[in-house]
Amino acid sequence: MESQPNLTLEQYQYLATSEANITGNEYQQLACFTESPPNYEMWCRFMRVRNHLTCTLDILRGHLSFIDAAKKFVFYGKENEEHGIKVEEIGHLGPQFPTFAPADAKFLRIFHAMIGIMSECEEFIDPLLAGMESSLAIDHLNGIEEFGDVAWYMAVGSDALDTKLQQVFKANISKLCKRYKEKNFSSEAAINRDTKAEAEAMLEATERGQGYA
Image 1 (cartoon, rainbow, N blue to C red):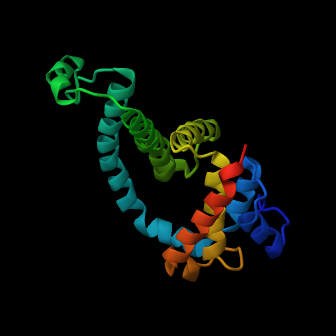
Image 2: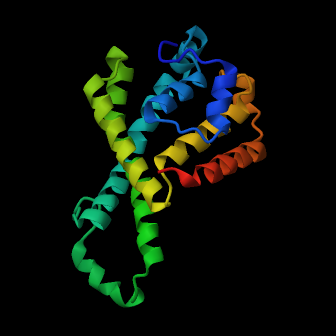
């Protein structure tokens, strides 16, 4: 694909297993090595499930709407009458939670990042449905905006885990390098994964990245 760098297998493996840093742009390029490339058979499979996917996404939108409302209530203090979420009811919960420890703060930050990514999925649904039902295209600027929002939650979540995004990139590429021995995507490797070996590769990459600035 056009976004792939002209790297050899040895260079790819070096970046995945050494202490060398991986920038955001390098991560993007390396990740694209293991993308399932679009082709006619994939298009046929998409068309086979297109109508079912459209119905499922429409149903999912309602559930994600509540997740987004809950996120905004917890982290922004915004009420939502449609989902019955009101600030006045918090007083009844106070005595049940008398303390607020550092561990609670860490959990809330991680929870914010994870539920935030879920809530962003709702933002993807409308343009995705519009594209599936008509033009089969996604608005460029809208895509940048939503992927940017997901990146923000990734940054906050990684910070809450006391982890640099550099380590997240490195761990993910190391896992993919273990899965795809020849660096390129294959259906067989994607389906028949050695999850234990992949976990070990991620752990090694994370330990190597402890010194990232």
